[in-house]
Image (cartoon, rainbow, N blue to C red; front, side, top):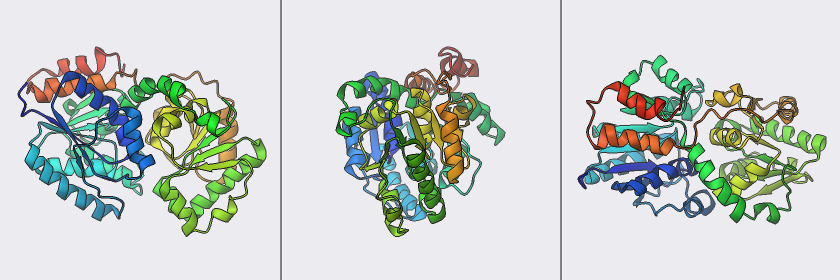
Length: 391
């Protein structure tokens, strides 16, 4: 393979880094030239650098240090800087993951320069256009050349929107790779349970960061009322690694006073991936509004309730691992009661832990080696039948 053939990977947030880590490790294992562009959308030590250290990833080739900001201005700045790098590097393909502004910017910049785009975790839909993430993921799918969907349902979502089927490959989700590769390491290295004086299966874990929840005083206030009800009804420790955005909104909305003296609520700073994985794996139940955490809970066989009105991970609900409860306090209590009775014997619908290998097989065959003339059956063999995903 000629050195000029290289892969560019664009990311900017903690979830992207976690899900792209298996891809980066697989690229390194194969000796394929690549560069990484970090937009700096997440930039604190806990939300960013510590994740690189936990996952054994090399330092980013480029760090744009964009930081936070309004969606439009943030994305515009990213596109401008990414476009300059792509014109310099001339990659064979640009890989983006998920539904962030960083992923959108990477896809837009590549599209304008007519560079092939591979969208990892394509085809997810909440069908809620009030969510910026939904707008991002739909846009990325429609301008991408290769859609790597985690499930057959995600593939069907894309086909229903008129996306040509031969662009779509069911690969499983790289979060399975990342969780399975790191959960044992977390059990050996993490001391977070000892530090917080927690015991296995004897606490709830809470995460909260979605804009539609934390940027609304009413929705955030309702969730906090639900958490207080949980504290009084169950008297279980509730561990809450608080997201910087959520922390800021609690101050903006004067909501700290409503929770500050809750005996069972333990608010802590964000933790690294290994510590968080340990907190998830050992918890009795997870309460979240994160799409990635819904997947991780399902993989780890920990019951989950989602404090949102919808989800782009319906597979987790269908197998019985997850329950969508909205933000009304009583609905939260009912969801917890239901999920605590679950048998934890569901099948993981997101793959077997070899998604990075499948995606790189496809990238090499279809893009890097330039074998676009291969019949569709060969793509299906590599992406679905051979690996046994999506049957």
